[in-house]
Every structure is written in C-alpha cells, then in structure tokens.
Image 1 (tube, rainbow, N blue to C red):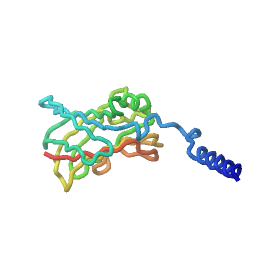
Image 2: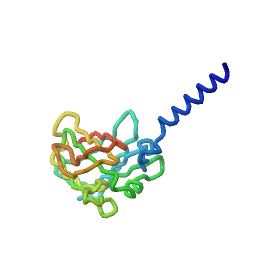
Image 3: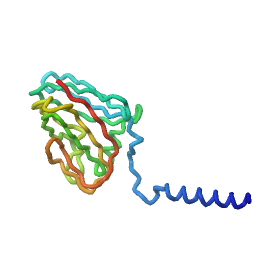
Image 4: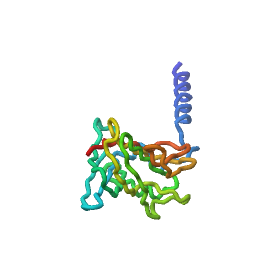
Length: 183
C-alpha cells in the first residue's frame, strides 16, 4: 500500500512540475512580480519644478497627479523592484516592451520623446520619456491616467485613439498603474 501511495505521489508531482514549466516559452525579462513601483517624474516646463508621483503595486490608494490646464510637462517613467531600477531592463529589451497611456476624463496631448536608448527597432518609441500638453485636466468624471507596460506584443503603434495613446496587438501586461488627475 505504501509503495502505491509513493507511486501516485511521484506521478502527481511529475505532472505538476511539467505543467508549470515555462522552459518551452520565452522567459519574460521583466515579470509582473519584478515591478513594485511605477514612478512618474513630472517637470513643469516653465518653472522647471519636478514633482514625483509613486504608484505602489497593489496599494489601496492611487497617487493624485496635480496638473494645470494650459501647461506643458516633461514626464519620465521609472519602473522599480524595491530599490532596484528596472527601467534599464526595459530599455535593454526595448523591442519587447511598449507603454500605453490612457487619460480618462481628461484632455491631454501626449508626445513620445524617447531617445535612441528607448526607441524600438521598428521606430516606435516606448514612452519612457513623454511631453504632456494639458488642455483640460478635469474633462469628465473621475479623471485618471491608466499606464500599462506591455510585453511581447506582435505589433505596436504610437497612434492616438480617443483618450488612449498607443495600441498593441497581442502581448501581455507586465504592469498597470492608475494615477488620479486633478488641478
């Protein structure tokens, strides 16, 4: 009887370990578990004042970004795992990543300002460095920015569709951050 139980356990653990193996898949350089914080450094282009907004993954509250209508801001997105900066990992595998910005309930124009280090070989810019031209921060109920880091999309586009800047076909989400928007 003991040998039958041992045999069943060996089969069970063998099947379990085989079904959980990712050996035949592309390993994601950066998994959802590797991102603990998504930080936006937002610089007022006129005053030069930089404000930092830190989204903590799985936090109960979302940071509230304060923007003034009619102003332009230079924005840098930083991805952290604890104290470790994962932004360089994203740049190192830039052809596998892309950021989507969705300014819900706001009227904000976004331009991607990435340099060569964060521009994909297909010419699309990741979105780690952007320029925000704020037309109207409060343009609907509950204005917010939903920022998505996408991994391994089949194709990407920097084009705008409504309040969304950037689209992808396929891929999976490495991280999502939600920031409230206010004046």
